[in-house]
Image (cartoon, rainbow, N blue to C red; front, side, top):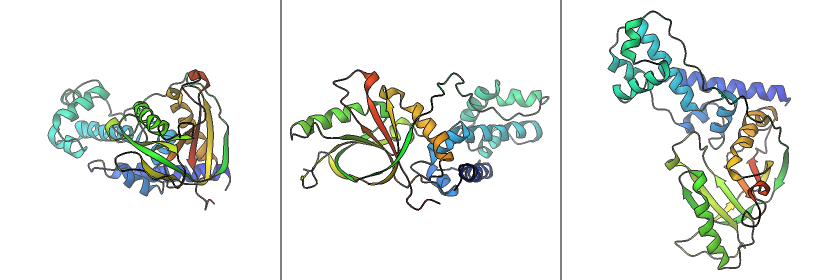
Length: 290
């Protein structure tokens, strides 16, 4: 499939998602259901959407709901409470806060003015000063890896504690020098921090028995992966992620597989300064690509 065809294909599928959002502004919507509408893997949909649209699904939904509210305030007769329900807000107070934050005045005042046309709230402006670095991506075949995995729930920047615990566990078994990985199941900008899930992982011999109450056995699947190697602090990883999902993937002729993204940490952060830390961002790709 040509790159332009792939980009159009992704665009059409994102269009379906946006249309689905617009038809259901008063209904609860899940990322998993929206991914199914666009025929995307739920592991990667949120990042693809954000990369192509410049905002999260929640941002789009909020803008569209508030636009509907503004139109209703000018042209309709519903009460503020009814408009809040129509736009999917659980309370009038929550609706009032969101509307005032976006339109600069409370909805009651906006209705009283009734002069200006309702304008769709703009998308959040993207950082035009962002480094336009083009990264290198290799498509490679990776072997499956058996690991001991310690689950982390919460903000991803706090996963270091799980890796420290895992390192202590591995050191007591002579495994501290083995390859280490992070498996990330969510997009940190699309879910509350307390709902994010990840696994801190270290490679183990396949025959190693794991006791209950500690790290759990996990196999990181092998197969085709798009791999981008980033050099620098882990705190900077969001930038290559955005480029990978927003630029490279929609133009690549490839489709993300239904499996989570994996990071492999290629050197020891304890022995090197952050500017030299090397991270392989590994996105699983479908084998049956067009």
